[in-house]
Image (cartoon, rainbow over all chains, first blue to last red; front, side, top):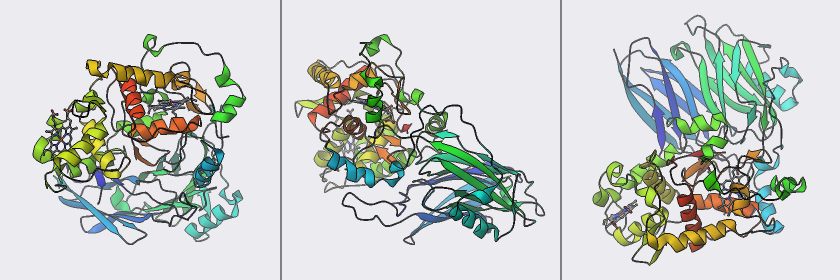
Length: 106
Length: 162
Length: 257
């Protein structure tokens, strides 16, 4: 069950700096909490985020437990050519979620 | 609700336990402190690990973070670095660290000339009122930083985990 | 301990209650009492984490479920049309059961009776997502007056629950939300307690929760034994709060500290 939300412009002119907002539903369990019975809740966070566009990783992030639940990251990239902008999130269990948006560049 | 039922819940929420009650903290402003080296060891170590021992100088980095937050679970931050983001002059990485969470590291962002603008935004957890530091690594290998003090207030009604 | 008791110790809440009924005062959404940062979180859909639940609800709306293998969409079509304004009418009178039912309950009724699927747990992610999605279709619409006569006695019951002193702190909901809204409890401003942004994303929870979860927090805050999820008391309180919020717009998904 993936829930990701990407906000990015659908069209841009070549050379424009476009703003991208990426959000994913994830508890970002810190590993520092215990459950109601006192048992430690194992750490499980998204530890890596990558954005690939036009053949290259244009932005990436290494995340730690101090990033809020349902991580939100906003950044920018220069519009180069039409095509997909792809996103991947990887958590401590090795699970990878992906999302992609199309951008039309004139 | 009886204390014995309430206590385990509070203990199970370390983020809540350590929060300071900062009544009347209005009027506090962002403080910029230029000496990260004076911070406690964990933070200093994390900074050193990030810069590989290179000197971190104050400047070039703008750190927007509210000085007083209602809830430490999601504090919005914006980091901007004053660089043109050209092939020869850009920001390679931006990192964020904190003083009092169980771990000093918050995040490391990798950018490059294709970012167009040296600006990132995210939301972070702060277990307590504390100092937060942003550090940028530039393409010439230099490191620059900015710090901010954040006051985290106590939530009024918390709950059991049920 | 924790905020409320220390406040009591300094006597702020022990001041004699004046009886400013909320009707004579401006109605203000809880949004008016939060920080500008929290407000802008709610205002921008691309950064409002509650929108992740709307999205999930939209997926679930399309998914076949239960022995019927019918999806919500197979009977209700486009939620944008069929669910527009629906949340404004809830809690509503359920003629079949002869008692009021809230939106979550109504959705669960469709799960069991129309989809032939097991009922969803109260704070389950699925039920919260569906409820958030359905309520979101009424965002921006104002709460109308309650006209169903069969709900009168329920509103009255809700009002007396709102005015009843409860818990070890011996405080009523009204003592805070009618008489002292705008004042501070520790560092938190006391809002007017409107139900119009629910289900909402509470930073404290780090997730979306229902209005009943919020009410349980307030009850635990005054050290009262909270009502059970789905209990008639909670539905009566929800209905009273809804008619008390008449005229305010739906905000779902709201964001609160």
